[in-house]
Length: 228
Ligand SMILES: Nc1ncnc2c1ncn2[C@@H]1O[C@H](COP(=O)(O)OP(=O)(O)OP(=O)(O)O)[C@@H](O)[C@H]1O
Figure 1 (cartoon, rainbow, N blue to C red):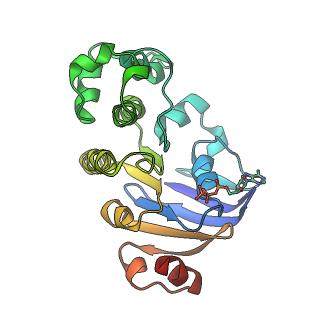
Figure 2: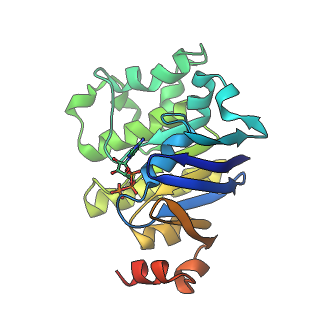
Figure 3: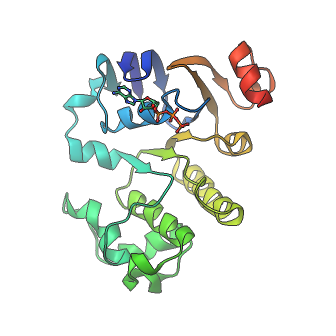
């Protein structure tokens, strides 16, 4: 579905791998090794300095940018909502392609387990956990094929983080979404991931199935990382 061919950018050096449809890939490894940079290459928040990225065989750069950002939905560590109501935020993406259907907010809020009455609330007056749910609902409003998640629960307290993770897991399974998630939490990697890409010093040092690669790490770097 998505192929990286010899991609370099900033800290990343000569990255090659293929992400298959419905794969749930976990990007993990020490700080500063380029995990977020790799994630941002998927939706062209960053572009390769060398090499190429292909989506269903077509250069990523040939996909119109609005379409690309809708297909590859991004959820960051902290909610980054626009000022305004919950509904304003949910409508934003689909409105760019005239694809918003009135009343759709009910279904989107239900996905993330928020009540329909929340739609008129000012996002500034919501709790951090509620804001992260709205951020996820806003991403889902674009009907993405791929969810790009950059430590989506790490800024939340344990209970709220677990709740968001449960919502994410259900959605990904029910909708058959493809996922790429950066996380430092190996328990979370086991719960959500099918595959792992262990990054070290700007390269993919080891990749494989989860949980196998966490139970039988091959490289010294991964063994050391897992021993913490
Ligand atoms: N184009 C670039 N040129 C040079 N350095 C860059 C470029 N892009 C990113 N970097 C640097 O590369 C480093 C790795 O960044 P990145 O945020 O991708 O790592 P990370 O593995 O996600 O780290 P963390 O786990 O701490 O979030 C950072 O220090 C960043 O400033």
